Length: 255
Ligand SMILES: [Zn+2]
Image 1 (tube, rainbow, N blue to C red):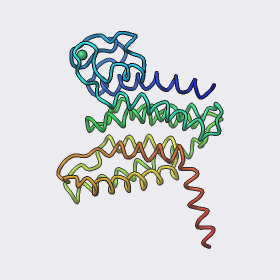
Image 2 (image 1 turned 135 degrees about the vertical axis):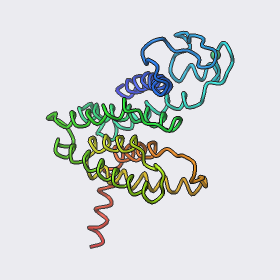
Image 3 (image 1 turned 120 degrees about the horizontal axis):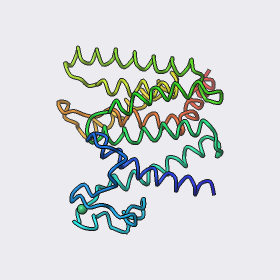
């Protein structure tokens, strides 16, 4: 029953995240007007605005102008409930404050992931409130990391990324790590602390390097690092605790 509720809730939120992903980088209001087809401007009827189902029923096309609705709309509507359920299970299948905290993180994370992926920008409107939220959550009595760990995590990430960005800039004369990445990583630090951040930085860098080698990315072209950081942080939140313990256990075992 809980799972069903989370899936419904997640699908509805995913639908809202799509609106945010489309409108925030275009500096449009995320509340009004109602959903419209980005091509012909046709208002989307409530019947055609049911998450997941509508996409399937309309076969991924606008009802009026027949233009294709980008597949990522569908992906976000599926991914959101899947991640919400996964989070619920990974935190012991019961409702808790920590579940709520990471629900907020995953929501912001999904929106930032796709905005950075499509527009190569991480809006301050999203990253700055996220830093604040991470710290605010840590001050509540029932949280997974203390306020000291949260502030230390944010500070650690900020300094590490600022220094790395500076060195990259000096060596390559290019902004490989932008201000958006620094603020995003600071937010991640405020949510998961230093240990989680170290995991996230190594994991996302490794994935990014492997992917860049596979797709033979032209190093003169821009490439968004934000999605990798989000992906790394999600992995840490959902299964990273288990991975870290296994890793530490391995050392104990070798010794
Ligand atoms: Zn249309």
